[in-house]
Amino acid sequence: MIEIGIIGGSGYTAGELIRLMIHHPKTRIKSVVSRSNSGKLIHLVHQDLLGETNNMKFTRNLTQNVDVVFLCSEHGQSRKELNNISEITKIIDLSQDFRLTNQSSFEKRNFVYGLPELQKEKIQESNNIANPGCFATAILLSILPLAKNQLLKNNIHISAITGSTGSGRKHSDTNHFSWRNNNISAYKIFQHQHLQEIEQTIHKVQNNFCYKVYFVPYRGNFSRGIITTLYTSSSFSLEKNREIYKEYYKNHPFVNISDINIDIKQVINTNKCILYLLKEKDQLIVISIIDNLIKGASGQAIQNMNLMFHLDENCGLKLKSVRF
Image (cartoon, rainbow, N blue to C red):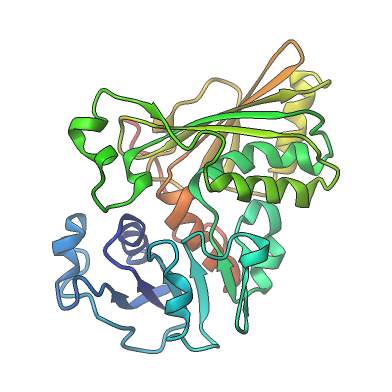
């Protein structure tokens, strides 16, 4: 069994990791660190885990040697945590600390960007993974087939709406129910931190890309899920573009191409990304949906762990959406 440690255990992504890991056939959770809740029963913080985690409690530090540690701390904290983890322990970091190439090395650790649909083989060979951001995941999965085939030949325009869990568990003015309910707002227009991940990856896959990426994110009035809409020019027919996407993703079990329009409920509580393509004059439009907490965070982290330990990519992640 793969022995697991989780640091930053009180947040949403950690809660989802615990929920998925306790049913993973190849893992055993040994330690869940939360310094603000040390000594408290896990199910008193993650109340959906009542009856699932028995008498498991949060600890102040990793209490045992483990095979892999998932870092679920706030952005900027992961570097501090690494000093307390054995060099031979594998790391999967869910923060943004190591996602950019110029920030991907720390002391003796070199982090690989953990988007399996981009570089599965590198993930399998790595001991340190930087889990992608939720917006970046949904958007890059709608771009990669074009970039891989060197077909991005104009500016890219993207809008995306995320649920309130995307801003984390800590209270803020914009995640109170009274503000979020019956409301929607744009934020960090053209300046969202995930834009750097997106641009970096596009340039890596299509190194002659010399255009702009315009990204407008929105806060939605729902709890979880992301829907993105991307458009850019394309000289190919809709049918040809669909062929390109289906060919790219034919060996990637979590990405599906839909022939009809899609909605967020199709992917909630799953590690899936569903794409829908359409064409209007010379513009190719790609709609992408994911669960921001699963494929956008904890599920993708487990997918990366499966690859690192040479397990079936689907292991522990054969999930179905609730839908209604």
